[in-house]
Amino acid sequence: MTSVIVHYAELALKGRNRPWFVSALMREIRLALSDLDVKNVRFVLGRLEVRLGADVPWAEVQARLARLPGIGNFSLTRHVPLDLDTIGRVIVSAIAGRTARSFRIAARRADKRFPFPSPEMERILGARVQAATGWPVDLERPAFTIFVEALAGEAFVYFDKHRGVGGLPVGTSGRVMCLLSGGIDSPVAAWRLIRRGVRAHFVHFHSYPVLSRTSQDKVREIVTTLTRSQLRSRLHLVPFAPIQQRVVVSVPPPLRVVVYRRLMVRIAEHLARRAGAQALVTGDVLGQVASQTIDNLDVVGRVAGLPLLRPLVGCDKEEITLDAQRLGTYETSIIPDDDCCTLFTPRFPATRARREQVDAAESALDVAALVEAAVEAAVVEDFRYPMVQSSVPHEHHTETLE
Image (tube, rainbow, N blue to C red; front, top):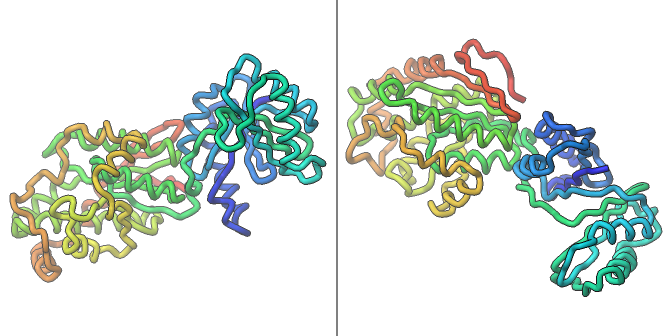
């Protein structure tokens, strides 16, 4: 019988709340593998066991679990009766034909009723392996490690640990609304929050039909990638060109970018409240562009009625780019597009906008009407992994993502 043993890291520190977090992780694992032949996902003495059917492709299971927040590491295991002689025979048979410069046994006794403590298991099984292979033992830096976990009535034997992304299971930290531009930064910002257990909804502002659909296509690709980690996503596509046209005729050029961003935050907040989200998330990086000075970030953030989270604010571009490459969004993000921020952008935007200046400029606009119109014009697209996508006008969409 083949199983995957899943170990969590941070969840072990949750004390009396740990069962709730573990149940959430089990739910996410079931969803992630729901189209594969998985017989069962169960809790076994401080770890999770995913029991696989005969024809499940291990490479696919490995890829999916490696992206799932809440997992510390996982391993493909063999079930063995809880008997040291049998465990030794299985190990020797499984490693036949392998070569190793050195090895060690790493044993854990989860069921204390088993009469052999971990060090003695390691000594007995290590001697058995050394007699069969001649490999030297190296307890500090072994070239090959054999893992044995003694549970109630059975043991698991495995040779490889695959690293997970850590963090917390999706949905355990609430919901957020992420402003997704299609560039490099905002997908990484969203991922960092997803890894901390939030359910991320997304809003993208586009200028179609004044500009092309490229930015929308890019964002769909990015959300598809992020959905492989959180399994269910909702994307709001907001037409922003009508608002920009109104801003251009009413707001002094240096202040237009700041006004654009304040309007985006207001619209995103309305959508967030409809979705039950508790915070907004942006990919702002301090000093990266003119709109992201401390002064401008302050003026933009003051219109938010929800917490405005900026997980990348202290990062540099190289660090964010490496994260985007690991996440798999980088190649999509660098595709050239007609981003709405390039439409009607002034040549010399203000880098130290003052709140009273921006408030005065916005007084020429019917801000409430602009925000309401944008919210009602938003189109919602839902994503699933395994993937199913639907698109409907916002006001007709009634499904709730938990």
